[in-house]
Each structure stands twice: as C-alpha cells, then as structure tokens.
Image: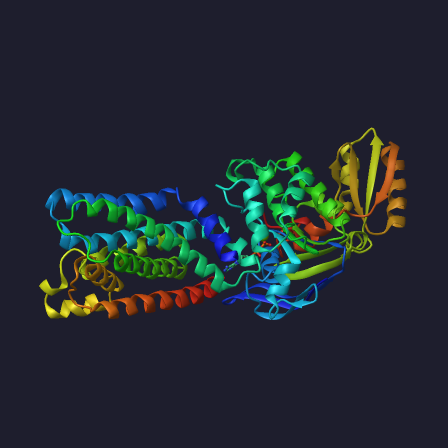
Length: 309
Length: 236
Ligand SMILES: Nc1ncnc2c1ncn2[C@@H]1O[C@H](COP(=O)(O)OP(=O)(O)O)[C@@H](O)[C@H]1O
Ligand SMILES: [Mg+2]
C-alpha cells in the first residue's frame, strides 16, 4: 500500500531523511518510531505530497507520489501533528467543506458525526484539545480513503483523550484501512502497530514485527528478581548486570543466562537470602528504542563507568 | 465548485477577524470621512478614496486569511485535498475581491452623498471597481505568499500600499508633480485604478486613457495570479 525506496529529503546541506526504504502492507498498522527531530514528520509530508522528495521514490496505493499527486491525495487521509480545522466553523461545517473539496458524498458527514459522536454544532475553536484531535482524525476520513497517515496523534493530549484516540486508531484499522502511525509514545508502540520501523537522525535503524524488534538487543534477556531480605551488598554483587528497580523487583540485563544462574547461586550461598520471584522477559520496545536512538557517546559512555563526569 | 466552497469558507472564517475589519474596513472608511470633514466638496478625491478602499479592503482580507492559514497550518488542508494550485489561488483572489468590492461599495454610497456632480457612468464605475479589486486582491495574495516568514507579511504590505496612495495620484493629481514622478506613477498598479475610476465618475482622466487603464488592470490581475501560483509552489 505504501512503499518508499531510498527516500531522501534535504534542506540545504542538512539531510532530514536519509535514503529510507520500507513497505507497508494493505490493512497493516505501521509504527514509525523516532525521537524528536528524527525525520518522522518530514517523511509523512513527503509521502502525502506536502513537500517535495529530494531523492528516491515513493508509492501510495499504487500511485507515484512524485508524478501522480491527485491519485495519492484521493487515496490518503492525513492527520497532521496539529489539529488544523477552521476555528470559526462548526464541526459539521468543517466536514461539509472538506466533503466538497474531496467531492465526497454529503451523507458521509452525518454518518461520521454519528459514528464518532462529535458535537456537530460546536465551533471547532471552542472544542477541548481532545475533541479537536478527534475531529481532525474524523476529518481525514471524509472521503473514506484506504490509507491513513497519523503524525503523533496523541501528542499533548491528556491520558483519557490519548486512550480515546488509540481506540479510534484501532477501529480505523479494523475497518480494513492501512495506517501509517508516527509516534514517540511507547504505549502506542507496544500496543498498536503490527510492524515497526525505528528512525533516528533520518535513518531507519531497525524494522520488523514487535517481537523481532524486542529481540534486537542481541541475546540480552531481562531478568526480574525478588529476594528477601534485600541487601545493598547484593546489588553491589550484581553490578555487572546493571541492576535497576522496577516496582519492588530488581531488573537485570543478562547476556549468558547459564553463567548468571551459577553466579546467583554462588552469591546466594555467600550472602544468604531467599528468592521470592525469578522470571525472564524480552526487553521492551522502549529498551530497544532507547538503545538504538541514543546519541553517540552520550549514555553509552556513562554506562561503562569511563565517563569523566 | 470547489473554488466556490473555498470562497464561502473564507468569508465565514475571516470576514470578522480583526485584521480584515481594522485595516480592511475601518481604515478606508475613516480615511474617507476625514477627507469629507476636511474638504466638504470632494468630487476630485472620490476616485482616489474608492481605489484606496479597494486596495485596503482586498489586501487586508487576503493577508489576514493567509497569515492565519499559514500559521495554524489550515492552508495545508487545501494542499492535501485534490484541488489544484490554480483553484486555490483563484479562490483566495476572488474572495479578497468580493470583500474589497463590498468595502468600496460602502465607501461609494458614503462619498456619493457629498458629491457636487452626479456620477457620469455607474456601470463603468462598477466595472473599474471590479477590475481594481481583482488586481489588488491578486497583488495581496502574491505578497502574502511570497514573504517566507508570515510574521512579516503585514509590514511588507504596508511598505507597498502606503506609498502607493501618493504615487498613484489617489490623493494629489500626478499632473501636479515633476515629470520623473510620473514614471513612479506608471509602475504603481493603483494609478490605473484611480484614473479609470476618475473617468467613470467624472468623465475625464489625468494620465491614462480609460481603455488602457482597463487593460492594465486585467494584465495586473493575471500577472499576480501567475506569480502567486509560483510563490505557492515555492513555499511548499
Ligand atoms: N522546513 C525545514 N527546513 C529546515 N529543516 C527542517 C525543516 N523541516 C524539518 N527540518 C529539520 O528536519 C529534521 C527532522 O524534522 P521532523 O521530520 O519534523 O522530525 P520529527 O517529526 O521526527 O520530530 C529536524 O532536524 C528539523 O529541524
Ligand atoms: Mg514531528
């Protein structure tokens, strides 16, 4: 449904998006993860014809983004990273206006208002930010496009509105639409996409299904450990596994689980404690995200203890 | 029909915004009233006052709407829709011209009460008003899109339109100035509007014969439309 080949955007000397390639299948939610400034919005703007492509190719719903803009525009609904409808128009007037621009049947307007429970007669400018976002998402559906782009749809929303938006996204996808979702929100990344690409400084640094992404940190396993009594000497003894507290358990990063078990038994004999809980899990997408997108020399340098500060 | 949909949307959204009302409606009316109060008999000034109303009405409306849309990124709604650049520009220019025409008609009703003579040809006056509003609106759209930072649009606009009031013969006849000043007048788009309106209202002109001013206004309208389309392509 969406394909990018060596897609590149340069602003002068600065390369905002650097030869990225990916394919999004029909009916898929594709998560496009990256920290601020990674190039997510620029990618969406290129794919949705809003900004020119410097190099490379892109296809949406079979249309060449550079040459068949009208075909692309008719195939996509775009929810931008701001809620940009017209303040002085009511929600219904906004949708009617867009329906005319897209030559969509006028019945779509009343149907969408009903389906998504929108306050039809309220001026857009008077809505809360949650409802503004909701209306902006609905506005992208006016011509019932097969492909939807959402650029950080839950950014700056309160917890409740964010959840509502996530539920909307799931509903859109259940209806068979292909969804390109950019985010740096990890709840979204863990729950919504079928496949994920992580972009950092304009380059895709990882791509795959959610479990594939989690396994990317090599053979590293997260070990959750609960002991009684918990002594600081134990934490010191486990230093090499970078122990961290999560709720009431210690979380360790372990490369060789067999050697770890031997060592744990040895420490247990030495310090004397009872193991209450021991479990292993793959790292979270957040772990992978942080690992792959950290600035070089920044956190890596500090973690190994050689950091001068 | 998409063009018409955009026009209706623009009128509802921006007609009552401070930017359109203050510089677009209040300024030209107060300006006209000030001249009436000062001079009483103002027949020879009416072409200038009408032209000033058209200039400020159109440019203020389109600038305020385009500044808003660029800043709030509602402009990108239009760009994302299957609407051509030409249709977008045409809609913006037409709606500015409609607003400007309303402002200049209000001015016409106001100042005609103070005319010593009656209007020579109302149809001709209306024709020149329509052409002037189209040309000025296209100029306003071009300036609003050509300035890369939308914050500076109003400043640039005033830098263009305030001097134009003097170089166009709107306030004092160009025949009263030295010859070199006439050259400045000839490159000022407003000169053609003022002289055309003068002909329609009073049956004489200062510098430019009526048919030529008509042609010049049409050419200006087309030229600034094309320049606007180019500026829009460059902006996004
Ligand atoms: N119009 C522009 N001109 C110059 N640089 C830009 C422009 N738009 C974005 N950038 C730069 O490109 C990079 C990627 O931006 P963006 O795609 O908005 O990132 P993201 O959406 O992932 O936060 C940033 O460094 C940003 O400053
Ligand atoms: Mg962004």
